[in-house]
Image (cartoon, rainbow, N blue to C red; front, side, top):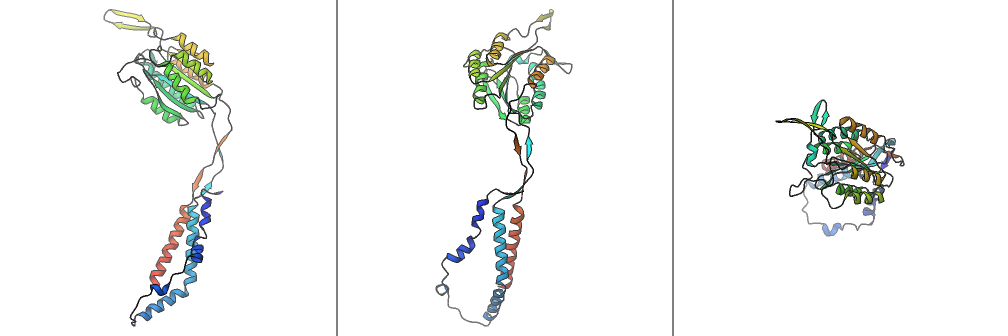
Length: 332
């Protein structure tokens, strides 16, 4: 169907007639000048009589050009059939730890040992790709917490900005390397508090304990619970790792700084769950569980594709105007 974006412009259609009808007439006597008659003036008078005889035809061309110009100004569009959009209504925020401990290479990816951040990016990218219809956001935190991506349906941009993140990106001006879990939760609460209460989810991934920030994780979790923000926490890192040195091999626990007690308390206070990811397979299973969360129901949303049509009447109006100009130049 045809739709006019600015239909009120049709009110300007009788404007030329109103100007001709009510504008004061030009006083030809006051504007006349003394001219000396010559023989050539007779040919000019004859040309004026010719254009006078064709004036009705030229007038109708001008009327048509004006109508086409008004039509183009109303910005006509052709609207297609409504298309239902896949919108689940979920507002999901990812918070990823970028502290220095995430460089620990205790994960395997494609039979190669990689650091924790690389493994997180690989699995999280697959998770983001499947979240069709969700609004996704990204928070990066270390010594400070930053909103890297606001809530958006643009999953591709979220993936790009996640892949472009690197260790040390979230340090303070002094270069201090720490982990501000509480600030990351507080930032998520701030960005999600204006959304619907039954669709707010934060997935927080870290491999350490809270060592920086203005608010403690437990206090931030209490605020999140008041705002009905559900938090799922993921503790990442292997329990055992073999380290080779000049004096031989020894086994160490690379996740000794992981504060599982606090992460569990955060999840319980907000109605979420705590997950432990010791390797890439466990991390993938966790995201599969999170992927199965039931989305909040919302009214269906529809999108109607449209094609602009204004350039057709605009081109026709310019063509008629050019014809009128040619006729006047030809006969005057």
